Amino acid sequence: MPDLVTHFAAAYFVSHLQKVRQHRVSLYMGTILPDLISRPVYILFPKLYPYTVALHTPVFLILFSLFYSQFFAKSIRKDVFLFTVSGMALHFGLDLFQRHIGSGYLWLFPLSWNSFEIGLYWPEQPLLLTPLWVLLILIIETVIRLRRI
Amino acid sequence: MAERRQNWPGKRILFVILLLSGQAGLIWYGRVYNPAITLQQCLADPERYDSARIEVATEAVITAISDDGFMLRQMGKEIKVVGHSPDLRAGEFVSLTGIYHKEGWIESDKIHVAKKRRVKIAASLLPVLVVLVLFGKKFTFNLRRFEFTPR
Image (cartoon, rainbow over all chains, first blue to last red; front, side, top):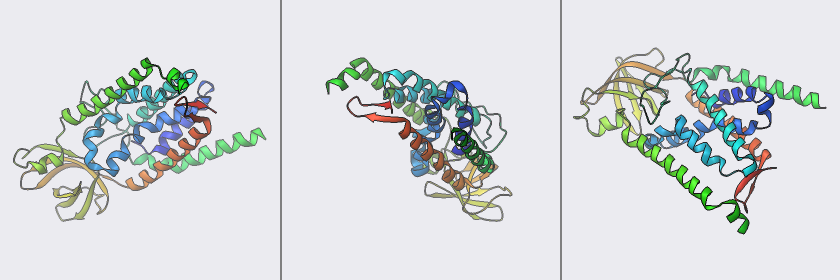
């Protein structure tokens, strides 16, 4: 995975689209959830790693989004689900371009244990661009706030 | 209480239970049927996994460098790795593929040192905080209805 700043920045730029703006929080949540529910478990408790294999897979995260959206008011439940899943899709879109030394992400789990990745960068390399993304977000947010005054 | 009951009809509760069961099933399937051979399996039964091709990637750290390779620690256990990468440095996270030998060493053919992984983990905390703050500003939890509603 790229770092979550990179994932968040991608969602932030997409969230300026007219149709997404109103649901940006769900999009942001969706883009961090794949790592948020899987990484802390095995970083803090490495022996639990075998139990986390499913957590970073599309099928698990669709089920998780459905579960998560049940805890929202009925009027917004469908939108919360759709934009959370969209955020997750964006997350996986960036992950697809990574490379790993061995097997990568299990896109078709549980139907297949095979993985596929485009392999443009190592997981740590996007970190080099993180300061740029933070700066860009700060500039855009400042401009938006200045325009409102 | 009546409001919560109305908002959480049996169908919705059943759906949540089904979703939780589905997720638990996937976690179990991933745990039981993963075909990848881990270093921990090899160390627990060296004879069985002698000459097996393995992948070590989960929280593995270089503890010392030697002429022909390095020492690797994963989940509290250390093992010798024979192989080279220009980025090897004690304390760095590493992932590798190679052949496990029952005598207690790995003959590695591919090594990747995950430089700055700790910085990456620390940096990743920032967007989590930002999203949680934005979430708190956008939604409020209605305890009676047991659901988030827009502010």
